[in-house]
Amino acid sequence: MAMARHHGGWIILASVVAALMLTIVVLPAWVAPFRPEWTAMVLIYWCLALPHRVSVGYAWLAGLCVDVLRGALLGQHALGFAVAAYLAVKLHQRIRVFPLWQQALSVMVLVALEQLLVLWVQGMIGQAHQGWDYWLPSLASGLLWPWVFLFLRRLRRHFRVS
Image 1 (cartoon, rainbow, N blue to C red):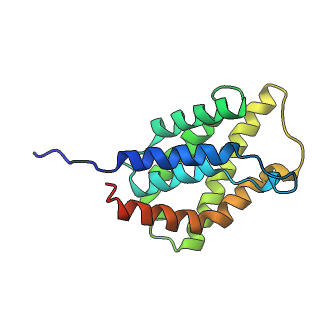
Image 2 (cartoon, one colour):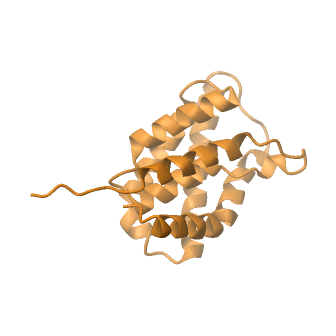
């Protein structure tokens, strides 16, 4: 049995690092509540495209990086990303055949679930966020999903990431 050769691992890593950098970019106050969950979207894309390479462990490590970058309780984003990645990998065959607008809705739900888990952890330690604006990043992520998807798919095809 011949072993499959994987290509383009550095593209996956570079896209996650770019998403981490977009996570900490300073935005004007009026735009900040709409900041999409870049890292979650990039991880969901790779979990859908290459579930055998990017899965829960990758998401957990990326979540720990987000926790460090945001100065959050270590593990709260890691838990949310890991659960979202698990569901993305588990449902990847269904979600991949959806039209782009249905994929965007699925991504919005996965990001909202990640945010719900983070909110749950924050509530347990007494730092729960108040207000509806907490959910705006999941809405923004769903709206931006088509462009993120098309960009990452083009990148994956150009560099033959497998």
